[in-house]
Image (tube, rainbow, N blue to C red; front, side):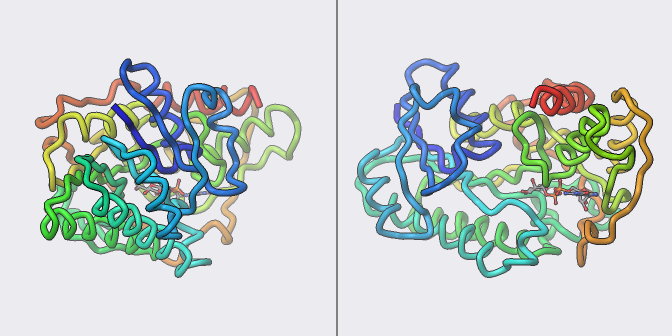
Length: 316
Ligand code: GDD
């Protein structure tokens, strides 16, 4: 079976490739953009086929999909950092929405049965009230960032292509996920890297932070990769699924936990440049629908993920 992973050089994409390579009978293909960083996939380049393509370009997307004729597509490529979506809103919308549109159109044109998972996001829920918690798939979408809006666009496009063309699309709304290889702009990786730099005496013992009162539902990326695979193996066509741990951490408590695992005395300082025009206050998901349809459950405790993040940066 042929599996295409868009965004294979990224964080979740590289972990999904690792997961697929541990299974038998899968030929793995990945799309890379010209000049993408490949450090996350250096260890597997001899076992996957990487093809150059920019998903914002319809022609190159169509050529790659025609050449591979994949049975499964995991569409993970995206502009995924929320603050960038304020600095470059149109680029975020084009990359995320038009990029996915080009994948759908390319698949529509080949006469081949293909299941497509699209990586939507809990950022779509945005302004969640206490009454909405825990968030299930029927919770209203009230996005609070251009990134959130781009993910609503991807999500609804997935619904529309399923309804209009009966394309075999499964939408996953992944809540926050982290783990080794996470870029250090995202909160856990950012804090873990700063702590390790302090441990090594590379910076003064002060950690710079943004909004510590936000709450997020974190899953280890290795559990998330397995969930993505299960979404196509067992998920229902046209459905949308939350994927989360059903536990919410205050960012400040997550930081205290990381500091308690570190070998240094550290002061915390808020940096106004790290605050956002609006920040999703609290995410706490309900993924009973996904658990029921696929049997998935997370297996890696968040404390283990935090330790792994510190070790990841200590080794670099
Ligand atoms: N990045 C960052 N840096 N975030 C900080 C900081 C900091 O110094 N201090 C506090 N935060 C807070 C943010 O304001 C936010 O409330 C929370 O930590 C998490 O921030 P991120 O790790 O940047 O992730 P995100 O929640 O904005 O988005 C992530 O999760 C989405 C799913 O909910 C990304 O992975 C998205 O791509 C994903 O869709």
